[in-house]
Length: 570
Image (tube, rainbow, N blue to C red; front, side, top):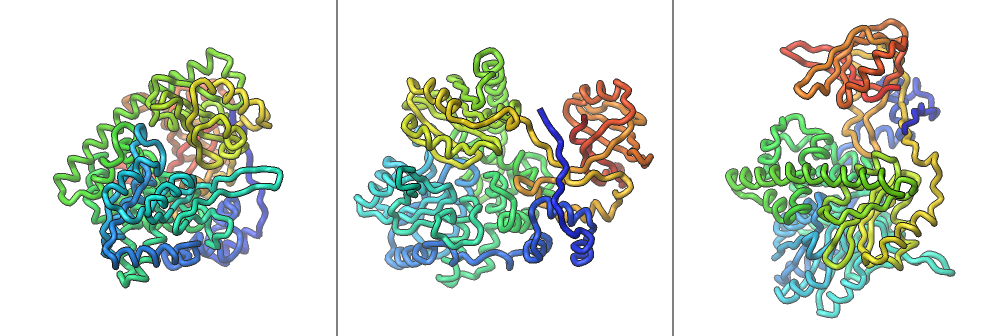
């Protein structure tokens, strides 16, 4: 179920438009995204690398730099331990390349999703110790590894944590107590006593911030940090952190540099997917490039993705890019099968009545649990956890809705879990199979969710007739990019009549239409997806159909014309 709402946030849009030389519609859209103050507006419209916050503001960054420079001078062996998703892959790439540039003797390890599970563990620490590693630096993990850090320290090793995940805690009668691992340095902007102004960086961005301070300390030209911006941008979009404030700047600057990337692996992956390197957007990262990189950690080993990025020849890069694309194609098929199994199970069992969906799919590859949970969440607008068989019990991932803080709800049942971690909107966990039923029952019993929470809210930025749309306005909308989580593409609404239409495309999944708005202004339109259902709506003969849309320029055979993409209707 969906329900449309129109933003009603107030501001003097005409004054903002005049001050920043934009249209009132643009001013309204920014206000809808809570961009209000002069500083925030200027940062949103014009923010570049100079608007990024100083890395030294982050707790323990200076301490970590001092430790690393000392280890470099002593010739100590350093090992970076990352994670198997796109954020972890990019973070470990950034740290290995950056540390080597500073003269460090460094290598890296990525946990195997099935054999090792998430993050640093005792096996990885033991291997590092046996390999003569003196210092471990984590990236995109470590903040929830207090016991593992103690084990490393007992072996005489130094550990530096770089992470961005929520800080683990426990509640008792004295209140909330945060559990910070006792590493030599802990860099995570979400620590309560960290003064960094922006708390929502991804793991690769936190790692890059460490490099910013390290390059400054060791005398490496600061301009060389820019070579990592495309990787930080990919990680930021791929990890679905909010595209606000500093994150939005990092993605914007990274996307600018992708057309001229020097990374052979990234070039090859773009080519393997038949993408135009001059027009890579956050959409292409989220739905094409990112899934290919993630596929390695899901079905094989994330080293495949890291090796792609580390490729030193065009032939090597092309070979590895082809392997990743093929692996992602296989992942798509397996995901669809698991998604259908989950939906069938929910529809045919008592799960359909649950407020929190806990679905056990024994045949599902554990790496696909999070994707399937996301698909089910979209289908029912309910928080969803998908569990499958792991090495020592059940393993799974959850995807949530705005009204349900999944991390905090898991804290309440932590006695049932062997391991868990995550965010309000997503989490991972493991538990014994015999605790599955109780896990599901307690999550549902303790929740305060109501039926109203399961209605998907679609927010309309502006109810805008077609007469406002012209080339200049469409160009102006590009100032809002990059789009993504927290900076969604604007949604416009209008009431239209359909003058004519036709279904096109090999799979008959494209609907071309000629529309008129309620003021009689005509405009061509296109719609994708379930166009047969839209056709049936048109055939009802209703005089007016409310639609949601986004305007764009259509270029065909050298001819440019304005059209709208219809994204929804009622």
